[in-house]
Image (cartoon, rainbow, N blue to C red; front, side, top):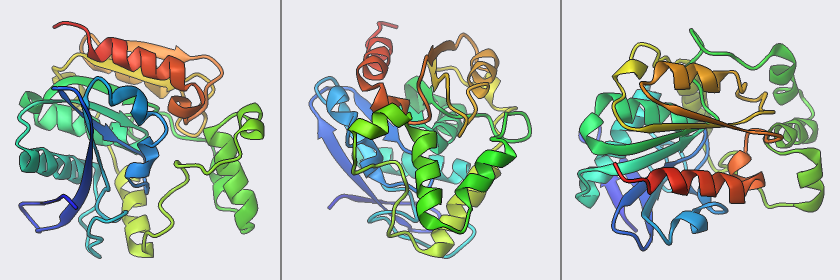
Length: 263
């Protein structure tokens, strides 16, 4: 099983390689999720790229340190450790949800390592971005676990899609995470603030968001697209947070067309 080790704290990071292309594409999932986040859409990308998926520290088969080492900028450094382990100097990066926050730091802090950048259903962070409203937050922390799970599902997918897709679902979190790691991921996402770094992103950038996303409000998408030089914006009508699964043919096509454009 391939593991990269970080330079600062020797944290072991599990990753997987798939696909057949010459160019590497790093795929970054959401908060408190492991590499299985990409199981459904990844086969659309594998014929064209060598795809890299990883378990963030705290998830899956990566180490789960009980330290204050969880941050979106730190996760970006972890991704660089994986690329170093693979001997990859430059790659495309596609991050969704918290993975999009991580991807922002990769592109801003390590510009020479990023060829093209896709930011999906993400935001610049609370100080300048749009946060989910109080009703959404309350729905996710209600004491009835089944009701909270249903609320999360309906934030990810439309009721019509849920009615015809009974699962399993890959976007609801890694059930094997210890409590300290789950708290670390929550803090990492909540503390994210890339506003001042966004204008430094030099990679061609595509911002994609579900137009009906209230989990990470869709109003964040034009904020990012306006802040990142020459970024493109695409809102998918009817899509909620997990647009890349429910609207998979359209979303995968958008991403592929963008990534395969000549420079």
